[in-house]
Image (cartoon, rainbow, N blue to C red):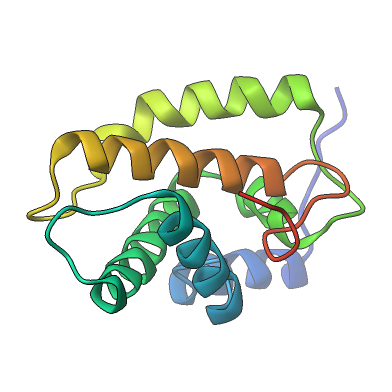
Length: 141
């Protein structure tokens, strides 16, 4: 097997990526996902404007969890509609991520069943965006 050696430039990109960046999604993508959550999910006792803020914070927290859990070469597919994973791979990834990340997402004062609904929908939207010809902004919830 041939040994693959990274260039100094590749090493520097990895260092910079691992040390300074903590999230993948842009503000526009975060807000688009939050709006999709807000259309589908009602948090009991919370006014609509406050719900949107909660969903934006939740998406940012989820984005940071995924950024720490997935190689950027894979997670970065949410930004590239021309490349992507197959439907079969998307389902497998959703299953793996669902199992590993569910206990890490906590939204204080939100009932567990609502939190689970948010988690499942958000995971579905993100993984769908990693498929070919999909994007976070353009897909419907």
